[in-house]
Image 1 (cartoon, rainbow, N blue to C red):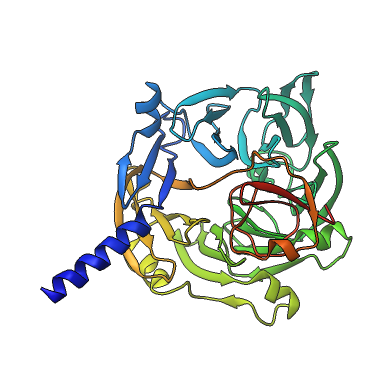
Image 2 (image 1 turned 90 degrees about the horizontal axis):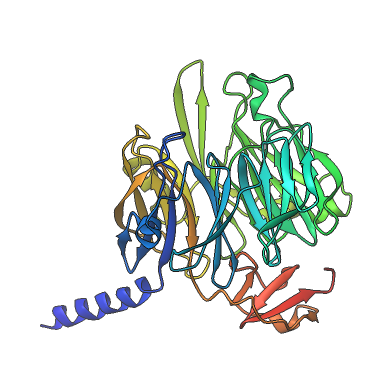
Length: 426
């Protein structure tokens, strides 16, 4: 009886923690097949693998590749091959869509505008048709859902982040194999207010492609190389150093790709790297835990580990056949990874760990699950613009505008207890 009571108490505590877990997971489906789906996970179970369809009576579209929260009850989803940005409420019901950004990729927000990268060369704006030679980033007014301005950056721009009034865009040049240009090696810095390019930072690393995570001033950027002679790697980028004009504003982690990466609650990065070679037709996987602040403080001598917390690294290597996404719930610290199930054509799985890295279990999803959004107490609606020196924000409940928990003393626009704060150097 005593053992039963202890087990019951443990189960009750676990359920109380699990009840905080509310995730939206994007299943990309197959490109040009228009078979994407959205899954909803809550309380340790998949509530639905047709969440958007059930809420709206139609599908999300073809190959969605990013999702972020842009308001207290508003979420944006970049649906790449359908050429739309779909907006939904937190209950899954559709609001509207922006249809003017073709071949859209990744998104960032400052709470008033949505910024989204595009491989395209033209965009419809409130001022008329806008055209460029390379790729661009579009600025969408979240009150009207219209594109108000665009800025040309590099060829095939991918990841994007907002920091201290500027946008940081990772350029890939990923169409180099079929178009008359080389791979890109730059991170473009764009003034978000005026949508003019400040400068390009040349990293010397080609093909800055895929998921780009942000924690405070730091970015984690992946490079898959050229799949032949240039190996995959990753970059840790310091946005503040770049704005200050410092030459050494990034560090290259050779032979350590960060194909699937995410920020953690304590200001670090988790990464699963995937290296592919057309010479061998083989994939090589790695895991990494990166402390960007420590890396810059020690000039790269410290701050990099090859193992994630607990059994996460071991479980990824033994339980997942084709890792396809990695995420830390910014409200609770629970860790998630998705598996594309080897063939990328059949339903994948969601795997879950405690914040300490203890394996909980797996849940069946749909085809190519790879993008996450946790729902929590996201309250950026208040208008108290208080300038601070950091002393009044020494707490564990500070979030940025994307709902990610940040460290005390972080700069930029932050949310604490439903109030908006702006740092002194904003």
